[in-house]
Image (cartoon, rainbow, N blue to C red):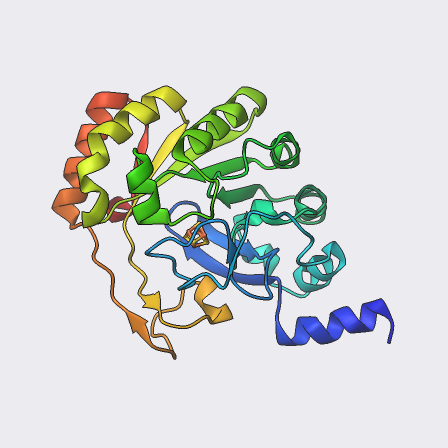
Length: 268
Ligand code: SF4
Protein backbone atom coordinates (compact mmCIF):
# COMPACT_ATOMS: atom_id res chain seq x y z
CA UNK A 1 0.00 0.00 0.00
CA UNK A 2 1.40 3.44 -0.93
CA UNK A 3 1.54 6.25 1.62
CA UNK A 4 -1.03 8.21 -0.41
CA UNK A 5 -3.56 5.39 -0.51
CA UNK A 6 -2.97 4.77 3.17
CA UNK A 7 -3.76 8.44 3.88
CA UNK A 8 -6.89 8.26 1.72
CA UNK A 9 -8.23 5.28 3.61
CA UNK A 10 -7.63 6.93 7.00
CA UNK A 11 -9.19 10.18 5.75
CA UNK A 12 -12.38 8.40 4.75
CA UNK A 13 -12.87 7.33 8.35
CA UNK A 14 -11.59 10.42 10.13
CA UNK A 15 -10.90 13.83 8.65
CA UNK A 16 -8.44 16.32 10.11
CA UNK A 17 -10.72 19.08 8.77
CA UNK A 18 -14.29 19.75 9.97
CA UNK A 19 -16.98 22.33 9.44
CA UNK A 20 -17.22 25.15 8.65
CA UNK A 21 -18.84 25.66 12.05
CA UNK A 22 -20.24 28.91 13.43
CA UNK A 23 -17.87 30.42 15.98
CA UNK A 24 -19.18 33.17 18.28
CA UNK A 25 -15.69 34.69 18.20
CA UNK A 26 -14.92 34.80 14.49
CA UNK A 27 -17.96 33.80 12.39
CA UNK A 28 -17.69 30.94 9.91
CA UNK A 29 -14.69 28.88 10.90
CA UNK A 30 -13.17 25.79 9.29
CA UNK A 31 -11.64 23.58 11.97
CA UNK A 32 -8.24 21.93 11.57
CA UNK A 33 -7.46 19.04 13.89
CA UNK A 34 -3.78 18.08 14.07
CA UNK A 35 -4.40 15.53 16.88
CA UNK A 36 -7.34 13.53 15.47
CA UNK A 37 -6.75 9.93 16.61
CA UNK A 38 -8.01 10.58 20.13
CA UNK A 39 -8.45 13.59 22.45
CA UNK A 40 -4.92 14.73 23.32
CA UNK A 41 -4.09 17.61 25.65
CA UNK A 42 -1.85 18.88 28.46
CA UNK A 43 -5.04 20.00 30.24
CA UNK A 44 -8.14 18.04 31.18
CA UNK A 45 -10.53 20.94 31.74
CA UNK A 46 -13.63 20.21 33.79
CA UNK A 47 -15.79 21.67 31.02
CA UNK A 48 -13.97 20.30 27.94
CA UNK A 49 -16.34 19.70 25.04
CA UNK A 50 -14.27 16.60 24.23
CA UNK A 51 -15.04 15.03 27.64
CA UNK A 52 -12.32 13.36 29.73
CA UNK A 53 -9.07 13.73 27.77
CA UNK A 54 -7.89 10.31 26.61
CA UNK A 55 -4.18 11.11 26.10
CA UNK A 56 -2.93 13.54 28.74
CA UNK A 57 0.48 14.70 27.59
CA UNK A 58 2.73 17.70 27.08
CA UNK A 59 4.85 15.74 24.59
CA UNK A 60 5.05 17.26 21.11
CA UNK A 61 4.80 14.79 18.26
CA UNK A 62 3.48 14.39 14.72
CA UNK A 63 -0.03 13.12 15.29
CA UNK A 64 -1.42 13.89 11.80
CA UNK A 65 0.97 14.01 8.83
CA UNK A 66 0.77 17.30 6.92
CA UNK A 67 0.01 15.27 3.78
CA UNK A 68 -3.18 14.03 5.41
CA UNK A 69 -4.23 17.60 6.29
CA UNK A 70 -3.62 18.61 2.66
CA UNK A 71 -5.71 15.69 1.44
CA UNK A 72 -8.58 16.48 3.84
CA UNK A 73 -8.61 20.23 3.32
CA UNK A 74 -8.67 19.97 -0.48
CA UNK A 75 -11.88 17.91 -0.11
CA UNK A 76 -13.53 20.23 2.46
CA UNK A 77 -15.83 23.25 2.03
CA UNK A 78 -12.98 25.58 2.96
CA UNK A 79 -14.15 28.30 0.52
CA UNK A 80 -17.21 28.94 2.75
CA UNK A 81 -15.12 29.79 5.83
CA UNK A 82 -14.04 33.28 6.97
CA UNK A 83 -11.14 31.88 8.94
CA UNK A 84 -9.28 28.59 9.49
CA UNK A 85 -9.01 27.62 13.16
CA UNK A 86 -6.48 25.12 14.54
CA UNK A 87 -8.28 23.51 17.46
CA UNK A 88 -9.99 20.10 17.15
CA UNK A 89 -9.27 17.11 19.36
CA UNK A 90 -6.96 18.81 21.84
CA UNK A 91 -4.03 21.20 22.15
CA UNK A 92 -2.78 22.21 18.65
CA UNK A 93 0.73 23.23 19.75
CA UNK A 94 1.41 19.58 20.62
CA UNK A 95 1.67 19.01 16.85
CA UNK A 96 5.33 19.15 15.86
CA UNK A 97 4.32 19.96 12.26
CA UNK A 98 2.17 22.94 13.30
CA UNK A 99 4.24 25.57 11.45
CA UNK A 100 4.35 23.51 8.25
CA UNK A 101 0.57 23.00 8.47
CA UNK A 102 -0.21 26.71 9.08
CA UNK A 103 2.05 27.79 6.19
CA UNK A 104 0.42 25.31 3.81
CA UNK A 105 -3.15 26.26 4.86
CA UNK A 106 -2.48 29.97 4.43
CA UNK A 107 -0.86 29.50 1.07
CA UNK A 108 -3.57 27.15 -0.24
CA UNK A 109 -6.64 29.02 1.05
CA UNK A 110 -5.42 32.62 1.31
CA UNK A 111 -7.51 32.86 4.52
CA UNK A 112 -6.47 34.03 7.99
CA UNK A 113 -5.48 31.39 10.54
CA UNK A 114 -6.28 31.36 14.24
CA UNK A 115 -4.76 28.97 16.78
CA UNK A 116 -6.66 28.20 19.99
CA UNK A 117 -4.09 27.17 22.60
CA UNK A 118 -4.08 26.39 26.30
CA UNK A 119 -0.74 28.25 26.48
CA UNK A 120 1.04 25.47 28.39
CA UNK A 121 3.83 25.16 25.80
CA UNK A 122 4.53 28.85 25.21
CA UNK A 123 7.73 28.71 27.28
CA UNK A 124 9.19 26.63 24.39
CA UNK A 125 10.95 28.87 21.81
CA UNK A 126 10.13 26.31 19.08
CA UNK A 127 6.41 26.72 19.77
CA UNK A 128 6.68 30.52 19.68
CA UNK A 129 8.48 30.17 16.35
CA UNK A 130 5.77 27.84 15.01
CA UNK A 131 3.02 30.33 15.88
CA UNK A 132 4.61 33.18 13.91
CA UNK A 133 2.64 32.30 10.76
CA UNK A 134 -0.76 32.52 12.54
CA UNK A 135 -2.81 35.72 12.36
CA UNK A 136 -4.48 35.29 15.76
CA UNK A 137 -3.39 33.27 18.78
CA UNK A 138 -6.10 32.83 21.38
CA UNK A 139 -4.65 31.74 24.74
CA UNK A 140 -6.72 30.07 27.42
CA UNK A 141 -6.62 31.65 30.89
CA UNK A 142 -9.31 30.41 33.28
CA UNK A 143 -7.54 30.77 36.61
CA UNK A 144 -5.66 33.41 38.55
CA UNK A 145 -4.20 31.08 41.19
CA UNK A 146 -2.36 27.75 41.09
CA UNK A 147 -5.27 26.16 43.03
CA UNK A 148 -7.75 27.57 40.50
CA UNK A 149 -5.69 26.15 37.61
CA UNK A 150 -5.72 22.68 39.20
CA UNK A 151 -9.47 22.91 39.79
CA UNK A 152 -10.54 24.25 36.36
CA UNK A 153 -7.91 22.85 34.00
CA UNK A 154 -6.42 19.80 35.78
CA UNK A 155 -3.05 20.11 33.97
CA UNK A 156 -0.45 17.38 33.51
CA UNK A 157 2.40 17.33 36.04
CA UNK A 158 4.83 20.23 35.78
CA UNK A 159 2.40 22.79 34.34
CA UNK A 160 1.99 25.86 36.57
CA UNK A 161 0.05 29.11 36.25
CA UNK A 162 3.31 31.02 36.63
CA UNK A 163 4.74 29.23 33.56
CA UNK A 164 1.55 29.80 31.59
CA UNK A 165 1.48 33.53 32.29
CA UNK A 166 5.19 33.94 31.55
CA UNK A 167 4.65 31.87 28.38
CA UNK A 168 1.90 34.20 27.15
CA UNK A 169 4.11 37.21 27.92
CA UNK A 170 6.91 35.49 26.01
CA UNK A 171 4.56 35.14 23.02
CA UNK A 172 3.59 38.80 23.32
CA UNK A 173 7.24 39.83 23.24
CA UNK A 174 8.02 37.81 20.09
CA UNK A 175 4.83 37.86 18.02
CA UNK A 176 3.33 40.58 15.84
CA UNK A 177 -0.16 39.07 15.32
CA UNK A 178 -3.25 39.50 17.49
CA UNK A 179 -3.24 37.88 20.94
CA UNK A 180 -6.57 37.14 22.61
CA UNK A 181 -7.18 35.66 26.04
CA UNK A 182 -10.04 33.15 26.20
CA UNK A 183 -11.41 33.10 29.76
CA UNK A 184 -13.98 30.48 30.69
CA UNK A 185 -16.15 31.38 33.67
CA UNK A 186 -18.17 28.95 35.76
CA UNK A 187 -19.49 29.26 39.32
CA UNK A 188 -16.22 27.50 40.35
CA UNK A 189 -13.89 30.35 39.35
CA UNK A 190 -16.11 33.41 39.91
CA UNK A 191 -14.16 34.28 43.04
CA UNK A 192 -11.00 34.81 40.94
CA UNK A 193 -12.35 37.55 38.64
CA UNK A 194 -10.59 40.42 40.46
CA UNK A 195 -7.26 38.58 40.43
CA UNK A 196 -7.85 37.72 36.77
CA UNK A 197 -8.10 41.44 36.02
CA UNK A 198 -4.60 41.87 37.46
CA UNK A 199 -3.23 39.10 35.24
CA UNK A 200 -4.92 40.63 32.19
CA UNK A 201 -3.28 43.96 33.00
CA UNK A 202 0.03 42.20 33.37
CA UNK A 203 -0.30 40.42 29.99
CA UNK A 204 -2.01 43.25 28.03
CA UNK A 205 -3.69 41.11 25.34
CA UNK A 206 -5.42 42.71 22.35
CA UNK A 207 -8.76 41.23 23.41
CA UNK A 208 -10.42 39.17 26.14
CA UNK A 209 -12.99 36.56 25.10
CA UNK A 210 -15.38 35.99 27.99
CA UNK A 211 -16.90 32.53 27.77
CA UNK A 212 -19.01 30.06 29.74
CA UNK A 213 -19.51 26.37 28.85
CA UNK A 214 -22.58 26.24 26.61
CA UNK A 215 -21.82 22.73 25.34
CA UNK A 216 -22.68 19.68 27.42
CA UNK A 217 -19.84 17.49 28.74
CA UNK A 218 -19.61 14.18 26.82
CA UNK A 219 -19.39 11.14 29.06
CA UNK A 220 -17.31 9.30 26.46
CA UNK A 221 -14.89 10.31 23.70
CA UNK A 222 -16.42 11.01 20.27
CA UNK A 223 -14.69 12.70 17.35
CA UNK A 224 -17.95 14.59 16.65
CA UNK A 225 -17.62 16.53 19.88
CA UNK A 226 -14.92 18.80 18.37
CA UNK A 227 -17.58 20.58 16.22
CA UNK A 228 -20.66 22.61 17.05
CA UNK A 229 -23.36 19.97 17.22
CA UNK A 230 -26.79 20.51 18.73
CA UNK A 231 -28.39 17.25 19.85
CA UNK A 232 -25.67 14.79 20.76
CA UNK A 233 -26.10 11.13 19.77
CA UNK A 234 -24.16 10.09 22.90
CA UNK A 235 -24.54 10.59 26.68
CA UNK A 236 -23.63 14.01 28.07
CA UNK A 237 -23.84 15.95 31.33
CA UNK A 238 -24.99 19.56 31.52
CA UNK A 239 -22.47 21.96 33.05
CA UNK A 240 -23.01 24.86 35.42
CA UNK A 241 -22.60 28.14 33.58
CA UNK A 242 -22.57 31.79 34.59
CA UNK A 243 -25.88 33.52 33.86
CA UNK A 244 -26.15 36.50 31.47
CA UNK A 245 -26.38 38.98 34.41
CA UNK A 246 -23.28 37.38 36.02
CA UNK A 247 -21.45 37.59 32.69
CA UNK A 248 -22.41 41.26 32.45
CA UNK A 249 -21.01 41.86 35.94
CA UNK A 250 -17.73 40.10 35.04
CA UNK A 251 -17.49 42.07 31.83
CA UNK A 252 -18.14 45.38 33.60
CA UNK A 253 -15.54 44.60 36.27
CA UNK A 254 -12.89 43.54 33.75
CA UNK A 255 -13.68 46.56 31.61
CA UNK A 256 -13.30 48.92 34.54
CA UNK A 257 -10.07 47.36 35.80
CA UNK A 258 -8.30 46.59 32.51
CA UNK A 259 -9.61 48.74 29.60
CA UNK A 260 -8.92 45.79 27.28
CA UNK A 261 -11.66 45.18 24.63
CA UNK A 262 -13.96 42.36 25.78
CA UNK A 263 -15.98 40.01 23.63
CA UNK A 264 -18.71 38.17 25.57
CA UNK A 265 -20.41 34.95 24.46
CA UNK A 266 -23.71 36.41 25.67
CA UNK A 267 -23.38 39.37 23.30
CA UNK A 268 -22.32 37.56 20.16
S1 SF4 B 1 -7.39 22.94 26.81
FE1 SF4 B 1 -9.10 22.72 25.39
S2 SF4 B 1 -8.87 20.66 24.54
FE2 SF4 B 1 -7.58 20.77 26.36
S3 SF4 B 1 -8.85 19.96 28.00
FE3 SF4 B 1 -9.09 22.19 28.01
S4 SF4 B 1 -10.88 22.62 26.75
FE4 SF4 B 1 -10.23 20.49 26.31
